[in-house]
Length: 485
Image (cartoon, rainbow, N blue to C red; front, side):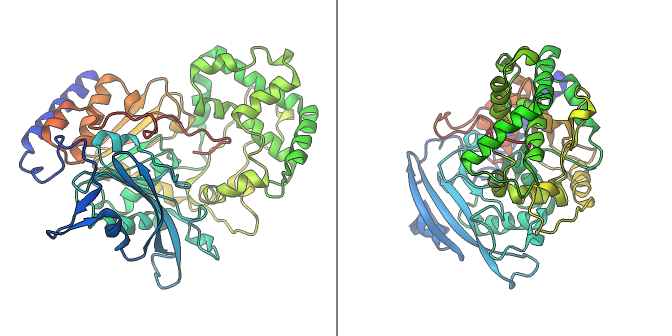
């Protein structure tokens, strides 16, 4: 493997060296500190970037926020509810633009959920020292049509949202584009590439699950039987089991907690169902968000731990607020998609006697209000998986060794070209290029730079072009309670 990576890296450097002519007009490493407070159009006139953005039909300004070296805009963009029938209504989709300079590459980011309105820079954006366009996924408020026709929430419609945004902004940002996202955002970047393979010059998909056959989830069972160390697995399993053994006293605590905070359980059906869902997320949630070194925070002897210690450990990792109506409501679009196209995992609990498990992993249907119709489409993920295996071009998938979501992942077939699947040792759902082994990190960085069209010198050096900014650069996993990519 190491020799193969070195051969690939040598080829990368050679390609970069030979591409001087091809990239003569592209962004170069000689301009990493450009602030780009103004930008030049195709004419000889210089126009402020805000004016260029607002000249895009359907684009409106929500807010501009300052950040040193950048212009940062929160915008609304008018999108069709149904891209197949654009005349049948529109909605306002929220996007943000972190503007560096039109001479730089652009990274198109989505997390697959709401968009943050705080300036931030994703890892590929730092690597290429570029602009960043971020999109809020359709149906996450406020980017939700009113009235909401939930049948128009699918992966093709969302990919078409990105396609329209790209076409509108490519006229301003004319250099290379790379799409990226983490978890559901990594899935989103992959689906976008499947449906619009000619838009992007590269794809960097982080920790993207790939549930090809929804009813076959044995990969997750194998993962949980081997992840980390036996000592850590035993601690986690014991606390999870103990929380179900002590169901009666801990549910009384849950009732008081729900009453104090005004929580209700109409969608999931009962407090009992919610309680078990939180407890069964516990082991998964630990490995998704924590490291092996965090095992010391888990009660060493669950049988002798107090009720408060069991409650606190479960609440810290899983979050007792989540399966309430108030906790589920913001994530209705995700669970709708999980129950119609994306699929959802179901795992076994061999360390817990059957008498303690009443419901098991509940299906996404239980987390979506019953007045929203749902029907699963088993062909959606099979289509994407087949396409990636045979058609991937300039695609990089990064997974964490100890992340449960990586148990079912994207894999490449013989038809894939200049595409890679790497695993960051010991890392969780926050795995990134920086966490890869040295050879893989160098190769991945070089490929991202090459796809972004920067100078051959920068490609050969295979280092991020922008300095790390602790305020701007997002590196840690975005921790949220409950089982959700």
